[in-house]
Amino acid sequence: MIVEPGTPAGWQRVLAAREQLLAGGAQLLAPCPHAKVCPVAAPDWCHFAQRVARSRTHRLAKRGTVPYEDEKFAYLAVARRPAVPLTARVLASPRSGSGKVQLKLCTSDGQLRERLVTKREGEMFRTARRLDWGDALE
Image 1 (tube, rainbow, N blue to C red):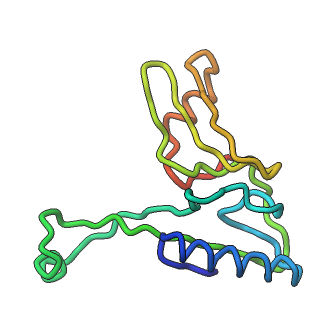
Image 2: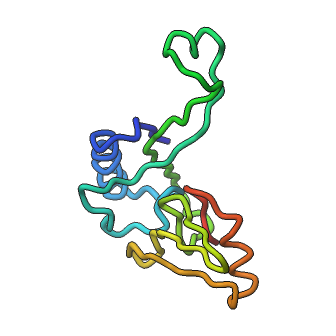
């Protein structure tokens, strides 16, 4: 597992490690649902966020007003053996509207796609409403 800051520079380091590990026979577990060339192009970069609780001292030191911080990171998880293949990974916070959810996905065929899921799609719509940034679709 490799974890870097969620910056363009951190993402570039993860991409370089990804290329070397794939060349060495590693199997990607996450976040990528494929072993093809990364479809994310600059100025965009692949990163995720996790909300982290801050202690009182940490909050005061950073002059924060809320007891949490959203830490952004880029990561890569690999293994020697393949895992259950993913259909896609959500690369941004889903945008919800009345009867629809817009998803930015990195798909198993190595493409970056925007997917509009509408209420007419029933179960897929219910699933899409529960998805968050970084979630996998199996």
